[in-house]
Image 1 (tube, rainbow over the protein chains, first blue to last red):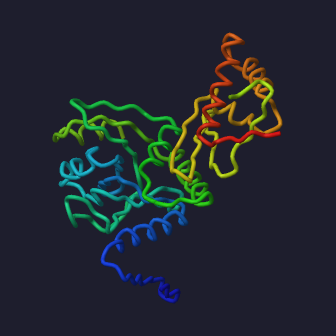
Image 2 (image 1 turned 60 degrees about the vertical axis):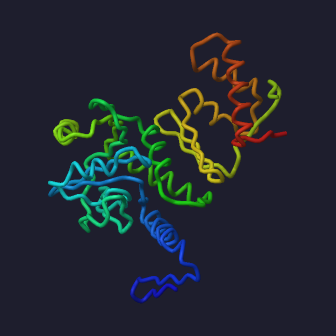
Image 3 (image 1 turned 30 degrees about the vertical axis):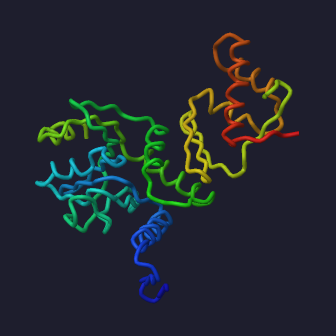
Length: 185
Length: 92
């Protein structure tokens, strides 16, 4: 049920399972219509900017969130990327991961996006737009895409990849992470 | 099997975009993505259902360096791959 007067939606299900998935899908569609998307990514913010760490399960999203406790961890699992005032913002979402509800409920302009890979040392490379768009598409949360939605996503992803620097990041899980990241962006 | 006289056209159910000379092709049906390099992206753009495979190979020969016969074979193989993936259809 959608109450347009207050912008709220109430979802009623006869089943005990699937409501979380449904809510996430509805949320995801709403974000796409705003020009953004939901991403498998952790996000960490300081006062004026945020950093997005994108990757599939086991890529290190929660590890990076654990190594960022002195900053604001917006999410360790699902980041909402949304354009606002000609910039892209990373926002916390209610869809958290292993760390549980540790998120700061706010957003911040994205300074850089990192496609993360656990490694034995630190290294990085700037991705091309097509490479970045490929990574984004593989990590966007939205099932059952139709053609119109996919075209809209393609536009949204292109706009983000055109306006925010994106990097492949190999990292080792240790406290030197932020020294390395701050040396890049 | 693709022959030089065949014509192919991009599937209407596919989303795609050319970016800086490369391309990203997305199949919504199976959520698969296909990044194409500069040569692949150019061939993709030329698959309009009007040009034959031979026409496309000639254009690629004119725009990129390489042995003509090798380019022709590569264009045929590439279009065959696109066809098997359901990204293009035969055109009359």
